[in-house]
Image (cartoon, rainbow, N blue to C red; front, side):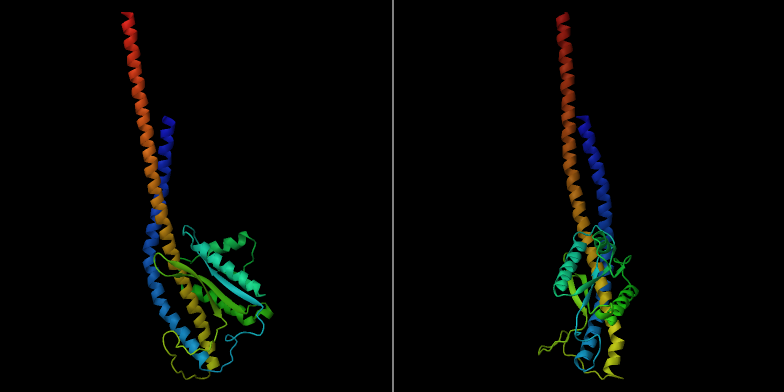
Amino acid sequence: MGAQLRDYRRRIASVSSTKKITRAQELIATARIVKAQQRVAQSTPYAREITRAVSAVASHSNAKHPLIGERPRLLRAAILLITADRGFAGAYNTGAIKQAEQLAALLAGEGKQVDRYVVGRKGAAYYRFRGVPMAGEWSGFSDNPQYGDAAAIGDALLESFEKGGENGGVDEIHVVSTLFVSMLSQSPVVARFLPLEIEETTEAPVGGVFPLYEFEPSPAEVLDALLPHYIKARLFNALLQSAASEHAARRRAMKSATDNATELIKQYTRLANGARQAEITQEISEIVGGANALADASAESQ
């Protein structure tokens, strides 16, 4: 009985130690979510407006630009997958990876070769373990990305896109990130960044009718100046959305782990108390039995 009690106490100590870690992770993630949300709110208006500006230039001009419109032959496509550098984030990484794999299967079914670019150690480890080659990978900033990180990624993707699929580059760029909807909801999303899609429609664009721009010196040169900023701004916003989602997912996962540890400690405590009570009862029974035996022996001797 004593061995069983020691085992329960050892388990309680082990779970209590784990609970301290998960509780600390939960508090850290909670503190970081607020700042991450603020950065998302600050970057989203610029990303939205530069997208409108590029869309307006592309819609109101007849400029022939390599970054606008479909290419005659679509041979290769790039997928940029944004994951986390660390775990303990529930299904955050799994959801993004699953979305990227579904997109890769779709593109491969269209006869396109897929080049994978990965942000975050978890995504890179997933592909490395399976022997899947990566055209580029970045890590070390998933929970706190800076604009310089987005610029470095954007430069690499633009360089590959400008080469084209026939020259070892890519003809399309897709980004798989995680959209921060709320503290309780984060959704993996896929967006095609390049080439820009121009659709004819009678509906007003999101945000209202495009303003009438005058292009100086020419629409093509305006696009040359705007498009790199457009790609980097959208990438930066996607990184920030993913970072906020990572913190929210980690907080939720660590809170669940902390609650489970608390419940497990309660269960082990009840079992330990039961074992202790049984041990005390057995000791009392042994004492009473010993006393009765002594009394019987004393009576017989008399």
